[in-house]
Length: 177
Image 1: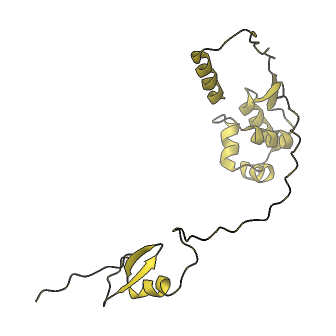
Image 2 (image 1 turned 135 degrees about the horizontal axis):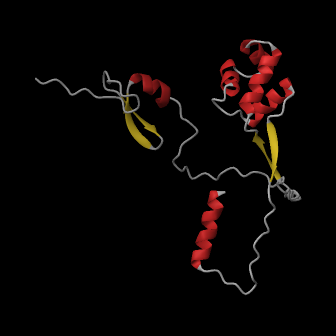
Image 3 (image 1 turned 90 degrees about the horizontal axis):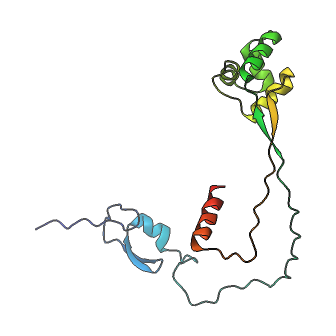
């Protein structure tokens, strides 16, 4: 007499003791253990991915939304903000003048002690946000505005017909921005 091969629940994978239960779940018939039968077999769930043949509920038709006016085009500023080259020297001198420790200054400025030390010793450049905090606290200048040159847009002649290569180049340029 050979032992019967153990059967496993098709939902949780637990070994099935006894005959098990066959239930219909999501349109498929599965063999499950007692615990999964308690969870899924007794109640008929309203949701199923299988089509039931019922008409979907229709929402009441509402009035169309009025179209919004497009926002006016804003031109980019003609300058960028950059950190000055001797930022480390300026911050270090300001810290020395204050006479306070890095720990005290870090709490008052809102930067970590490590960030403050790294900036003061020139190990890393501060972000614009950090530089503004340092400028406000020490009343020094760390950010300078750099004017950008205004470039004229290239005009395309009216009788120009683009080639496939021109279109491909235009798309590549657009992706890089």
